Image (cartoon, rainbow, N blue to C red; front, top):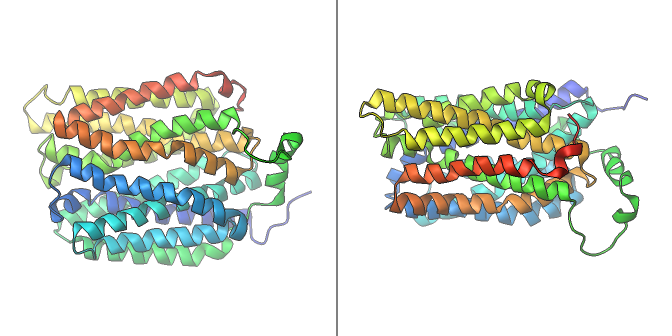
Length: 404
């Protein structure tokens, strides 16, 4: 029997996609202005900047019990609305902060709403994939990346036009809020079918009271997610600073974050096609290899030439490979969970988020400390090794039974 929906499945999909677009647009607007934030607030060095960015994952960690509380009580629909509106407002508030203390508080809130948005939106995406009956989660992440590319291009233009963060963030926040409010009513609550399907797989264990170890699939994927988040955070927070500080590129050539996001978008557009060729496990292994090679190029070949144009080209190639590699990791993880996990989707994502939260905690301090002592290129080389770790983890037995 065909499932009865209040709206067409296409309209529901567009609504969820619009939330991903709004989040991606806000995110890239923030990330693209990090060099300006670094300079405007007179951050002393890389280590201090790392501590400032460290407040974001602290906020993300606080978000885990919060979203775990809200999801079963008010549902993913209302949780998504509260989260993404908080995320949008936090972006604008960044431009209003008078000192670095206020900036730190705002970064904490930004991180908290960021993770709440991630979990609630991906719960929505898993529900839409269930409605469609085919893998489409990667398209939502591709939409996020497309909006992030647009936001990065707009930010690049505003930087070169000398438009400050106040007007930039105000415009972005208003546009994002309008998109969110226009599409909110079309979101769906995960149906009882989604919960029943996961519970039928393991009826006896579902009744067990007290603490129970998460299924091994979630632990393994949570570790992959952890490493992927270190890579993502490094690229999100340090890309343009890398071009500014290591390559010594002028503002017109600080394209690190932009090329990374363009390839992240391109990779997500190709992810579903890659599944049909290799299967999801192999896709994760290829992704890890690309991440490793990309960081290797950017960190070790930086001093092969003194010509600025060649440095920009070499590092752009490295950043492109990293973007292509990291693009498919998170959507593939979500899709594997939606198909194979015995745990309900919202709970599964919360468990994996709890495991992976260490990644964002480690990233800013790791990169900041190594950069401050040895240079940002050596921090990038260190992070690149994690791509190889992703390949090794995915070789584990747990993923052998996953569907293609």
